[in-house]
Amino acid sequence: MLAEAAGSPSELEVMVERRASGLPLEHVVGWAGFCGLRIAVDPGVFVPRRRTEFLVERAVSLGGSVVLDLCCGSGAVAAALSALLRPAEVHAADVDPAAVRCARRNVPGGRVYEGDLFAPLPPGLRGRVELLCANVPYVPTGDVGFLPAEARDHEPRVSLDGGSDGLDVLRRVAGEASAWLAGGGHLLVETSDRQVGAALAAFERGGLRARVSSDEERGANVVIGTKV
Image: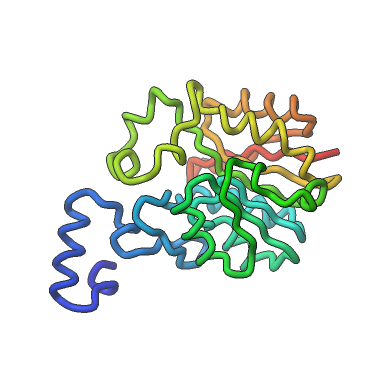
């Protein structure tokens, strides 16, 4: 990948040095593979994980013409849903300005907002979202130091740290989602094995009918909530 991305032997040497220093490969080459797409990933922006492709697959199986990607990072989920569903409207939001700049390149046909969760969204979107995907940070604060150095040192803390039990942001999203979802709309959030029970409870407290879908091969769990 480095050899393919480099424009000259000297550039390749620099790229190899950057990778050897611990910089994520995706930051070195400037992109990540995700759902068959090349997603631009700038330095300091969260790298989309392959296990999150399972969240996209679940979302595509449900469908929707108005899509919202919260905590969008590079916009990988929004870009994939745009390509696979071709929805009428695509919206995305992230609190990190660098991620927003990156997402605007990856989702040129969508609207990408900068701000905290639902806060920057236009009021006219309330009650209209049919598919809400939120790849929220879900690493407990005490566990962030145990992450691989590539994530710990080169990705924004805000995209990793989910609070004391890893579910602070998930609870906020689940608590507000109903106001933004259309009737029958769905909220999908990725979480870990040990957090599934608490995540389901948070969805139900938010007024959503909740279930979990898992993929053992990819180590992925997606909690799916439906507004009834």
